[in-house]
Image 1: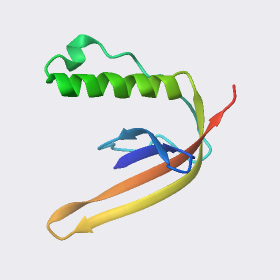
Image 2: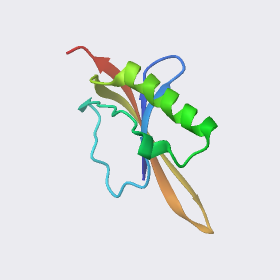
Image 3: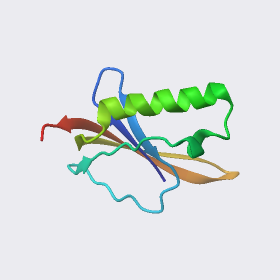
Image 4: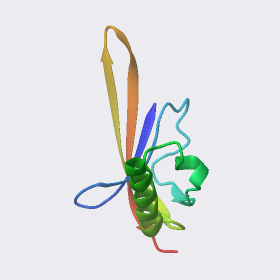
Amino acid sequence: MNVFFYLNTEEETEIVTFYDLEANPFKLGDEVNLSIDELYPAEYSKYNDHYKKVFIEDNEELRKKFNRKKIKLVREGKYVSFKTAQKPSITIEYHCDIVDS
């Protein structure tokens, strides 16, 4: 099961994605506190310079937008994908609003 969080904007800004979850710990109406950790050199040192820069910039952008913010899950979409030669998969999308603390 994959779970996606999107900020309710015209562009549906992606907040975070969880892949291969065994169970969904979230439900509609939940309020979730976000914490975006800093990247450490050991976490990106094995990548080439281009990808290092992308990882660092993307993480900093996420920190600016969402670090220490609280979101509320206000809308949910569920999707099942399958074909005969592979296991089916479930995707749950949560559309979120930022909650003023």
